[in-house]
Image 1 (tube, rainbow, N blue to C red):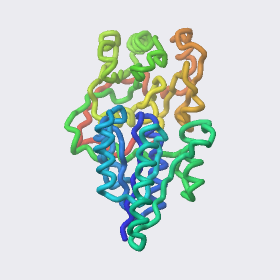
Image 2: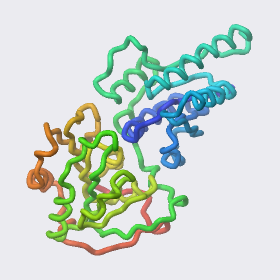
Image 3: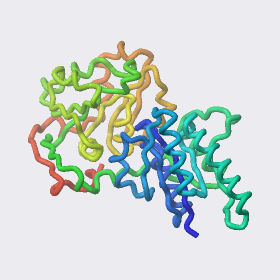
Length: 332
Protein backbone atom coordinates (compact mmCIF):
# COMPACT_ATOMS: atom_id res chain seq x y z
CA UNK A 1 0.00 0.00 0.00
CA UNK A 2 1.30 3.44 -0.96
CA UNK A 3 2.09 5.46 2.13
CA UNK A 4 0.85 9.06 2.17
CA UNK A 5 2.88 11.52 4.24
CA UNK A 6 2.10 15.15 5.00
CA UNK A 7 4.99 17.51 5.85
CA UNK A 8 4.18 20.94 7.29
CA UNK A 9 6.62 23.80 6.73
CA UNK A 10 5.08 27.22 6.22
CA UNK A 11 8.26 29.32 6.27
CA UNK A 12 9.68 31.93 6.53
CA UNK A 13 11.91 31.81 3.45
CA UNK A 14 15.20 31.29 5.26
CA UNK A 15 13.72 28.50 7.38
CA UNK A 16 12.21 26.86 4.30
CA UNK A 17 15.53 26.99 2.42
CA UNK A 18 17.27 25.60 5.48
CA UNK A 19 14.86 22.66 5.66
CA UNK A 20 15.67 21.46 2.12
CA UNK A 21 18.36 19.12 3.42
CA UNK A 22 15.85 17.64 5.87
CA UNK A 23 13.29 17.20 3.07
CA UNK A 24 15.92 15.37 1.05
CA UNK A 25 16.57 13.05 3.98
CA UNK A 26 12.85 12.40 4.50
CA UNK A 27 12.56 11.48 0.83
CA UNK A 28 15.50 9.07 1.20
CA UNK A 29 13.86 7.51 4.29
CA UNK A 30 10.51 7.06 2.48
CA UNK A 31 11.56 6.44 -1.14
CA UNK A 32 8.23 4.88 -2.19
CA UNK A 33 5.87 7.16 -0.26
CA UNK A 34 3.89 10.07 -1.65
CA UNK A 35 5.11 13.22 0.09
CA UNK A 36 2.87 16.28 0.29
CA UNK A 37 4.28 19.57 1.57
CA UNK A 38 1.94 22.10 3.20
CA UNK A 39 3.48 25.57 2.91
CA UNK A 40 2.68 29.26 2.49
CA UNK A 41 1.27 30.58 -0.82
CA UNK A 42 4.28 32.89 -1.22
CA UNK A 43 6.50 29.86 -1.88
CA UNK A 44 4.30 28.02 -4.37
CA UNK A 45 6.46 28.92 -7.39
CA UNK A 46 9.68 28.35 -5.44
CA UNK A 47 8.73 24.73 -4.73
CA UNK A 48 7.32 23.80 -8.13
CA UNK A 49 10.52 22.03 -9.12
CA UNK A 50 11.50 20.66 -5.71
CA UNK A 51 12.58 17.04 -6.28
CA UNK A 52 11.93 15.95 -2.70
CA UNK A 53 8.13 16.22 -2.61
CA UNK A 54 5.37 15.00 -4.90
CA UNK A 55 2.75 17.64 -4.19
CA UNK A 56 2.67 21.14 -2.75
CA UNK A 57 -0.43 22.35 -0.89
CA UNK A 58 -0.88 25.95 0.17
CA UNK A 59 -1.97 27.26 3.54
CA UNK A 60 -1.67 30.88 4.63
CA UNK A 61 -0.23 30.59 8.11
CA UNK A 62 -1.86 33.91 9.00
CA UNK A 63 -5.26 32.78 7.68
CA UNK A 64 -8.22 32.67 10.03
CA UNK A 65 -10.32 29.90 11.50
CA UNK A 66 -12.35 29.27 8.35
CA UNK A 67 -9.23 28.58 6.34
CA UNK A 68 -7.97 26.23 9.06
CA UNK A 69 -11.25 24.33 8.82
CA UNK A 70 -10.99 24.05 5.03
CA UNK A 71 -7.43 22.77 5.22
CA UNK A 72 -8.40 20.35 7.97
CA UNK A 73 -11.16 18.92 5.79
CA UNK A 74 -8.62 18.50 2.99
CA UNK A 75 -6.33 16.56 5.35
CA UNK A 76 -9.20 14.27 6.41
CA UNK A 77 -10.25 13.59 2.83
CA UNK A 78 -6.75 12.46 1.80
CA UNK A 79 -6.22 10.17 4.78
CA UNK A 80 -2.48 10.58 5.47
CA UNK A 81 -0.66 7.82 7.37
CA UNK A 82 2.12 10.05 8.74
CA UNK A 83 2.28 13.75 9.59
CA UNK A 84 5.71 15.41 9.98
CA UNK A 85 5.62 18.86 11.58
CA UNK A 86 8.73 20.84 10.65
CA UNK A 87 7.09 24.17 11.53
CA UNK A 88 6.38 23.69 15.25
CA UNK A 89 3.86 26.54 15.38
CA UNK A 90 0.50 26.80 17.11
CA UNK A 91 -1.19 26.29 13.74
CA UNK A 92 0.83 23.23 12.74
CA UNK A 93 0.39 21.71 16.20
CA UNK A 94 -3.38 22.18 15.91
CA UNK A 95 -3.35 20.34 12.59
CA UNK A 96 -1.24 17.58 14.13
CA UNK A 97 -3.42 17.06 17.22
CA UNK A 98 -6.67 17.11 15.23
CA UNK A 99 -5.27 14.72 12.62
CA UNK A 100 -3.87 12.31 15.21
CA UNK A 101 -7.14 12.16 17.17
CA UNK A 102 -9.13 11.63 13.98
CA UNK A 103 -6.82 8.84 12.85
CA UNK A 104 -7.19 6.99 16.15
CA UNK A 105 -10.98 7.35 16.06
CA UNK A 106 -11.03 5.87 12.58
CA UNK A 107 -8.67 3.10 13.62
CA UNK A 108 -10.89 2.10 16.55
CA UNK A 109 -13.96 1.86 14.35
CA UNK A 110 -12.20 -0.01 11.49
CA UNK A 111 -9.30 -1.71 13.23
CA UNK A 112 -8.44 -4.26 10.61
CA UNK A 113 -8.16 -1.65 7.86
CA UNK A 114 -6.19 1.03 9.61
CA UNK A 115 -2.46 1.69 9.81
CA UNK A 116 -1.21 3.05 13.11
CA UNK A 117 -0.84 6.83 12.63
CA UNK A 118 2.58 8.37 13.09
CA UNK A 119 2.88 11.97 14.26
CA UNK A 120 6.43 13.34 14.03
CA UNK A 121 6.56 16.57 16.03
CA UNK A 122 8.48 18.16 18.87
CA UNK A 123 6.82 17.49 22.21
CA UNK A 124 5.61 20.51 24.16
CA UNK A 125 7.76 19.62 27.17
CA UNK A 126 11.03 19.46 25.21
CA UNK A 127 13.35 22.45 25.68
CA UNK A 128 13.83 24.92 22.85
CA UNK A 129 16.77 23.92 20.62
CA UNK A 130 19.88 26.02 20.04
CA UNK A 131 18.59 26.76 16.53
CA UNK A 132 15.70 25.82 14.31
CA UNK A 133 17.90 23.55 12.22
CA UNK A 134 19.28 21.83 15.30
CA UNK A 135 15.72 21.24 16.46
CA UNK A 136 14.87 19.53 13.16
CA UNK A 137 17.97 17.34 13.40
CA UNK A 138 16.99 16.23 16.91
CA UNK A 139 13.42 15.55 15.76
CA UNK A 140 14.59 13.38 12.88
CA UNK A 141 16.96 11.37 15.09
CA UNK A 142 14.24 10.83 17.70
CA UNK A 143 12.04 9.24 15.05
CA UNK A 144 14.73 7.15 13.41
CA UNK A 145 15.20 9.28 10.28
CA UNK A 146 18.85 9.74 9.36
CA UNK A 147 19.64 13.28 8.22
CA UNK A 148 23.14 13.42 6.67
CA UNK A 149 22.10 16.30 4.39
CA UNK A 150 20.54 18.51 7.07
CA UNK A 151 23.42 20.99 7.00
CA UNK A 152 24.09 20.76 3.30
CA UNK A 153 20.93 21.73 1.38
CA UNK A 154 21.34 21.29 -2.37
CA UNK A 155 19.49 24.05 -4.25
CA UNK A 156 20.83 23.37 -7.74
CA UNK A 157 17.36 22.24 -8.81
CA UNK A 158 16.28 25.88 -8.51
CA UNK A 159 18.35 26.87 -11.55
CA UNK A 160 17.88 23.79 -13.73
CA UNK A 161 14.51 24.68 -15.24
CA UNK A 162 13.77 28.09 -16.73
CA UNK A 163 10.67 27.24 -18.76
CA UNK A 164 8.43 29.17 -16.36
CA UNK A 165 10.75 32.15 -16.24
CA UNK A 166 10.65 34.23 -19.39
CA UNK A 167 12.69 37.13 -18.03
CA UNK A 168 16.14 37.89 -19.39
CA UNK A 169 18.81 39.48 -17.27
CA UNK A 170 21.38 41.84 -18.63
CA UNK A 171 24.17 41.39 -16.14
CA UNK A 172 27.86 42.27 -15.91
CA UNK A 173 30.12 39.36 -16.68
CA UNK A 174 31.51 39.56 -13.14
CA UNK A 175 29.54 41.24 -10.42
CA UNK A 176 28.79 41.54 -6.71
CA UNK A 177 25.23 41.28 -5.38
CA UNK A 178 23.94 43.58 -2.63
CA UNK A 179 20.76 42.60 -0.75
CA UNK A 180 19.86 45.59 1.43
CA UNK A 181 16.42 44.41 2.51
CA UNK A 182 15.03 42.27 5.30
CA UNK A 183 11.67 41.35 6.73
CA UNK A 184 9.30 44.30 6.97
CA UNK A 185 8.55 43.18 10.55
CA UNK A 186 12.23 43.54 11.49
CA UNK A 187 13.62 46.79 10.01
CA UNK A 188 16.40 46.76 12.63
CA UNK A 189 17.94 43.81 10.75
CA UNK A 190 18.87 46.14 7.87
CA UNK A 191 22.38 47.58 7.65
CA UNK A 192 21.73 51.24 6.75
CA UNK A 193 24.78 51.92 4.52
CA UNK A 194 24.19 49.83 1.40
CA UNK A 195 23.67 52.96 -0.71
CA UNK A 196 27.08 54.29 0.34
CA UNK A 197 28.67 50.91 -0.42
CA UNK A 198 26.99 50.92 -3.84
CA UNK A 199 28.38 54.41 -4.52
CA UNK A 200 31.88 53.26 -3.56
CA UNK A 201 31.66 50.28 -5.93
CA UNK A 202 30.42 52.56 -8.70
CA UNK A 203 33.26 55.05 -8.17
CA UNK A 204 35.80 52.22 -8.24
CA UNK A 205 34.36 50.66 -11.40
CA UNK A 206 33.22 47.54 -9.54
CA UNK A 207 30.17 46.04 -11.23
CA UNK A 208 27.39 45.27 -8.79
CA UNK A 209 23.71 44.37 -8.78
CA UNK A 210 21.26 45.47 -6.10
CA UNK A 211 18.38 43.05 -5.48
CA UNK A 212 15.30 44.61 -3.90
CA UNK A 213 12.26 42.87 -2.51
CA UNK A 214 8.70 44.25 -2.62
CA UNK A 215 9.21 46.09 0.69
CA UNK A 216 12.30 47.99 -0.53
CA UNK A 217 11.20 49.36 -3.90
CA UNK A 218 11.22 52.92 -2.57
CA UNK A 219 14.99 52.59 -2.03
CA UNK A 220 15.83 51.99 -5.70
CA UNK A 221 16.83 55.58 -6.47
CA UNK A 222 19.47 55.54 -3.74
CA UNK A 223 21.70 53.01 -5.47
CA UNK A 224 24.35 53.62 -8.11
CA UNK A 225 24.47 50.09 -9.50
CA UNK A 226 22.02 48.04 -11.50
CA UNK A 227 18.80 47.49 -9.53
CA UNK A 228 16.68 44.36 -9.97
CA UNK A 229 13.25 43.92 -8.43
CA UNK A 230 10.17 41.81 -9.00
CA UNK A 231 12.28 38.72 -9.68
CA UNK A 232 10.78 35.26 -9.68
CA UNK A 233 12.37 32.77 -7.30
CA UNK A 234 14.18 31.07 -10.19
CA UNK A 235 15.43 34.43 -11.48
CA UNK A 236 16.68 35.39 -8.04
CA UNK A 237 18.49 32.08 -7.70
CA UNK A 238 20.12 32.57 -11.09
CA UNK A 239 21.34 36.08 -10.24
CA UNK A 240 22.80 34.82 -6.97
CA UNK A 241 24.37 31.69 -8.46
CA UNK A 242 26.43 33.65 -11.00
CA UNK A 243 27.59 36.31 -8.54
CA UNK A 244 31.22 36.55 -7.54
CA UNK A 245 30.24 37.65 -4.04
CA UNK A 246 27.04 38.46 -2.11
CA UNK A 247 26.62 40.96 0.73
CA UNK A 248 23.31 40.72 2.55
CA UNK A 249 21.42 41.17 5.80
CA UNK A 250 19.85 38.39 7.83
CA UNK A 251 17.26 37.58 5.19
CA UNK A 252 15.90 34.66 3.17
CA UNK A 253 17.82 35.38 -0.07
CA UNK A 254 21.04 35.28 1.96
CA UNK A 255 20.18 31.68 2.94
CA UNK A 256 19.56 30.96 -0.73
CA UNK A 257 22.95 32.36 -1.74
CA UNK A 258 24.73 30.45 1.01
CA UNK A 259 23.27 27.13 -0.15
CA UNK A 260 23.87 27.79 -3.84
CA UNK A 261 27.60 27.63 -3.10
CA UNK A 262 28.22 31.35 -3.51
CA UNK A 263 30.88 33.31 -1.64
CA UNK A 264 29.41 35.99 0.55
CA UNK A 265 28.83 37.70 3.87
CA UNK A 266 25.65 38.25 5.90
CA UNK A 267 25.53 41.08 8.43
CA UNK A 268 23.79 40.43 11.74
CA UNK A 269 22.81 42.92 14.40
CA UNK A 270 19.90 42.15 16.77
CA UNK A 271 19.47 38.55 15.63
CA UNK A 272 21.85 35.67 16.29
CA UNK A 273 24.19 34.62 13.50
CA UNK A 274 24.79 31.30 15.26
CA UNK A 275 21.07 30.50 15.49
CA UNK A 276 20.63 31.28 11.81
CA UNK A 277 22.94 28.38 10.85
CA UNK A 278 23.69 30.31 7.64
CA UNK A 279 27.47 29.91 7.70
CA UNK A 280 29.07 27.60 5.13
CA UNK A 281 32.68 27.10 4.03
CA UNK A 282 32.18 29.87 1.43
CA UNK A 283 29.51 32.04 3.03
CA UNK A 284 30.37 33.91 6.24
CA UNK A 285 28.32 35.70 8.89
CA UNK A 286 29.33 38.73 10.92
CA UNK A 287 27.68 39.56 14.22
CA UNK A 288 27.86 43.13 15.53
CA UNK A 289 26.14 44.79 18.47
CA UNK A 290 24.66 47.65 16.47
CA UNK A 291 24.43 47.70 12.66
CA UNK A 292 24.25 51.50 12.71
CA UNK A 293 27.84 51.67 13.98
CA UNK A 294 29.20 49.34 11.29
CA UNK A 295 30.88 51.61 8.72
CA UNK A 296 31.38 51.05 5.01
CA UNK A 297 35.16 51.10 5.45
CA UNK A 298 34.92 48.37 8.07
CA UNK A 299 32.86 46.19 5.75
CA UNK A 300 35.24 46.81 2.84
CA UNK A 301 38.19 45.79 5.01
CA UNK A 302 36.32 42.62 5.95
CA UNK A 303 35.44 41.54 2.42
CA UNK A 304 38.54 42.75 0.51
CA UNK A 305 40.47 39.44 0.80
CA UNK A 306 37.54 37.52 -0.69
CA UNK A 307 36.82 39.65 -3.73
CA UNK A 308 38.20 38.09 -6.94
CA UNK A 309 40.40 40.31 -9.06
CA UNK A 310 38.12 39.83 -12.08
CA UNK A 311 35.37 41.72 -10.27
CA UNK A 312 37.55 44.83 -10.27
CA UNK A 313 38.66 44.59 -13.88
CA UNK A 314 35.53 44.26 -15.97
CA UNK A 315 32.14 45.81 -16.55
CA UNK A 316 31.45 43.93 -19.78
CA UNK A 317 27.75 43.08 -20.04
CA UNK A 318 26.32 39.78 -21.15
CA UNK A 319 22.74 38.65 -21.59
CA UNK A 320 21.54 35.51 -19.84
CA UNK A 321 18.34 34.05 -21.19
CA UNK A 322 16.56 30.82 -20.44
CA UNK A 323 18.09 29.18 -23.51
CA UNK A 324 21.64 30.33 -22.86
CA UNK A 325 22.05 29.83 -19.12
CA UNK A 326 24.29 27.15 -17.74
CA UNK A 327 22.01 25.16 -15.38
CA UNK A 328 24.79 25.00 -12.79
CA UNK A 329 26.78 27.75 -11.08
CA UNK A 330 30.31 28.31 -12.28
CA UNK A 331 32.87 26.11 -10.55
CA UNK A 332 34.28 27.77 -7.45
